[in-house]
Length: 145
Image (cartoon, rainbow, N blue to C red; front, top):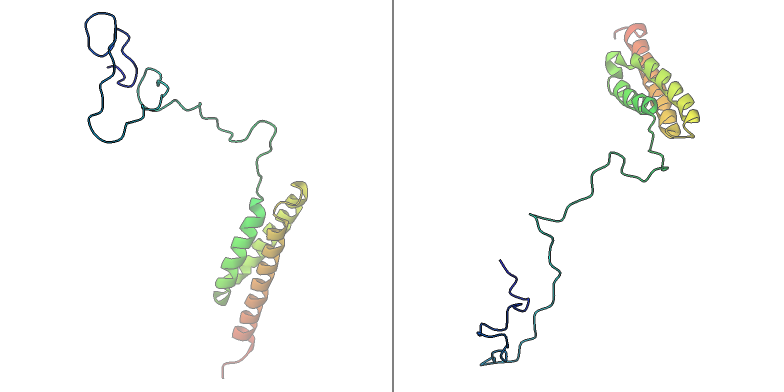
């Protein structure tokens, strides 16, 4: 199929012979501008080809972001320990404090990544431990009134 916007390479506007005649006149209205020249798409189907996908979205030499999963785990355990501290499950805060201390040491190796989360996890788990100790004291030590 040919492009209707390109001139006919075989001679003009449908006339026999090699000499093109004048273009047809517009019968009404304003004269129309010729259509804009558009580049020819390459042969093939569909859209232009995308470059091949690489597994690393950044150029070489750019370090990938590293997260401190121990610090994140400490924060998550701290929230769960506070929520469940009324049922003596707040003693899980001991595990969370351990995760927080390990996350704090790992953040020193990673250049400070996750330091705030590790400190927050230690604080949450310490609070859960204090709440659990208070619940145990109130439940077992204070006599029923």
